Length: 245
Image 1 (cartoon, rainbow, N blue to C red):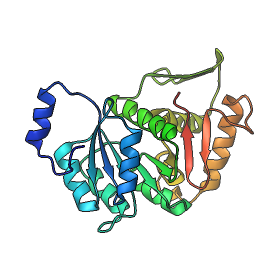
Image 2 (image 1 turned 180 degrees about the vertical axis):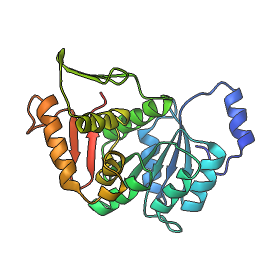
Image 3 (image 1 turned 30 degrees about the vertical axis):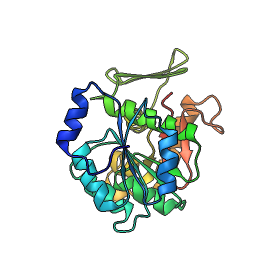
Image 4 (image 1 turned 45 degrees about the horizontal axis):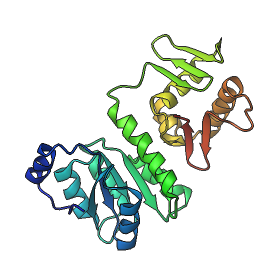
């Protein structure tokens, strides 16, 4: 296990040895949680680093340059949301929040601050590993794939063309822009306010009914059963997530 106080020289030395595993920074003040994460993320697949408080997390993020951060919110010195905001000032590293806080306000606050995903403790190892894989895949892409494909749905971004089971789907300009936004962040939760700000503008961030209506209309066109959506999932009280695999 690597300490959060490793220097850049030490990290560079490790790279020279040929180790090229994804670096995971685990930020949690509870030893038992960090022990669980070590068991969930085998050393043969990841290089693990730890930080037990907010200031140590900020220092480690700068020194280690992790590929992904697993961030608790209840830290003894800094609130986890503040840590996320400070990291986002200079880095776009994927951040997955792992927290016992399960209120919608906590989820929205963390995601709006710049977190990429949010898991409520306790969670399964399989779900954590799946979320990590999705986040790492997204971070490796310099730009969104020109064509999104998931089962029967195909979205060709350069051609602005949407097909379902080979048949073209006609969308309104707003429906397409909403789908395009979800495609470019596939697998990531986008909050209501993030979507409203991007599609309708900052003056409309409180108009969630407009978003709900557009999502409903979009689902009517791309979902086999709009009442049980497969592609566009709802994160209740938080936002939406487009299926990525």
